[in-house]
Length: 279
Image (cartoon, rainbow, N blue to C red; front, side, top):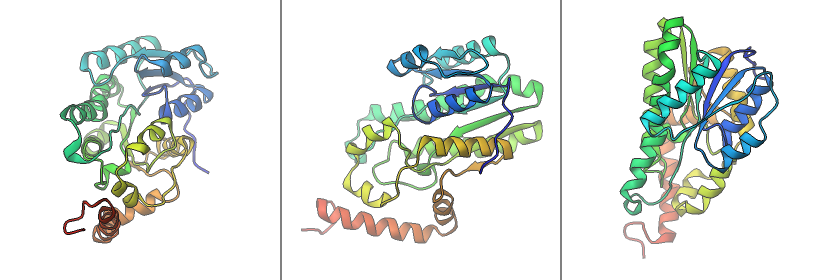
């Protein structure tokens, strides 16, 4: 059983909080009595959240924005700070994924993935950081991915920004810890969300072979890990039973992880005719 941080009357800003992991987190922290602000695209998901906000001690604040746009991101964060005061916690959940063979993906996909997954994280952090530095307190949690720890077949547009988020977290952790600010990266495997359901049909066969039979975890499992990580001030958060072990394998014995991945990909590539020398 993980620890639960005391978030009563604390201001928690969640980007991408209208769906998936972000929405699950919004529901949980509202129930913990936090002042919750959501930064998300002004779409059907946000409309549903606006029409049916989760119960809580404080009114839910919604700040529509495309976090890939620096000015929109800064304006949305400013709106949150004006409504609920300085941010105690920022969790960046906004993200997109476009799987496919590297050479077949259009240039715009690489630009959009980097703009949302990395720059969208960066702008929101820069929006809340001055207030945290002024008070010498605060927590910043960024959703990276297991694909921010290892290269995944078919994720040529997704892995690089997630690696960048990982690098950002590692750098900020060192720089901001002496100033009283806790920074953590989150590295989940596949999470059972509508986004994953839309993504799966686009997977190349080699990607499915590499990812094997690892079952997606629920958003609630990720939320439990995030809250426990905040309470324990963890610097790296690995949700789910297998994620920590997979991360240890990837980081501690990369040659073993490479061998397993290469064999799985080669077997699938032989079936698709993409393996060099295959009939």
